[in-house]
Image (cartoon, rainbow, N blue to C red; front, side, top):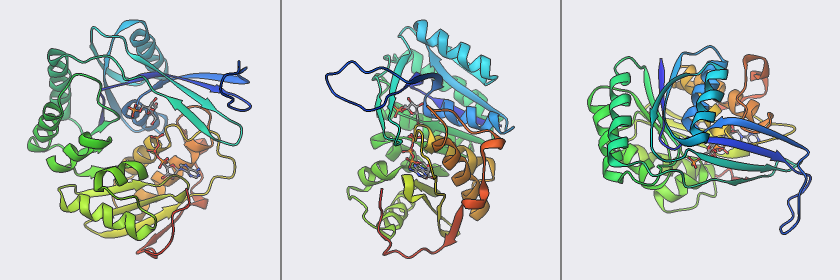
Length: 312
Ligand SMILES: Nc1ncnc2c1ncn2[C@@H]1O[C@H](COP(=O)(O)OP(=O)(O)OP(=O)(O)O)[C@@H](O)[C@H]1O
Ligand SMILES: O=P(O)(O)OC[C@@]1(O)O[C@H](CO)[C@@H](O)[C@@H]1O
């Protein structure tokens, strides 16, 4: 069982518009509502592909009830911790060429007592989990020290921890000794204080995160694919998408696919890239099912040319 933790989940509203024009009334050609938040998406993707997962989410207010209803409707196994604040609602504006504009709320304040309750739920459930996967932004409230403490306690208790977050939360996961971190290009740049221009820059940044405590680094690079740096070496992979529809949740699908296939080696990276590419071809933050997956276009190679420039 893979336990996911989304401290700041959301109800995701995706609107498809012909073109994004500031100051105009835009008419949506189509709209979708999905349960959202990065860990929630990892659980949804795993479930859609027959992998057991439980999602821990703090929920509150009308949107919190809606999120629980949406997740129950999909059959996601939930550990919902009630909070006083209102679960956020995040907006996606998707244009026909695949350009996505996202507006994410900060999310409700999580009080110290509420964070302690969520942490207890996570630590209790972690005992039966193959992985504990903490994803997404931290909501207002919990200090970075409190978050770092949760990561350290999980690692100390023997859990295999994966962290997909940004800024101080990503670094806290690294320092706690997470077995895996999954930064995207911007998160990696922020973590090492340098914008990568080539695959070599990405590999060097991943090595720095490993030296700082992470076991493995899976760096997602949008249309440039992904790089895996772990104790076995370096792998690079790409999976071209002919008609990108929405990149929202692609990183979550990549992580879910990678974990589902054992989180190690070319087979796991291939699986992650197939799930990521499939998510990009689907609207909103819809997660791929087995019928959406096509592994034939995925290319994974060891020790890629470090001078290869990044495009996206
Ligand atoms: N335009 C694209 N074309 C092909 N594949 C893509 C594209 N965008 C994303 N992907 C695939 O999805 C994976 C994750 O994308 P990205 O690096 O954008 O993740 P992310 O920023 O974490 O996404 P999110 O936070 O929305 O889940 C990439 O590694 C790649 O495999
Ligand atoms: O604000 P965060 O927590 O960084 O990201 C939240 C979010 O953008 O991430 C998911 C896609 O990865 C969406 O379902 C959700 O709206």
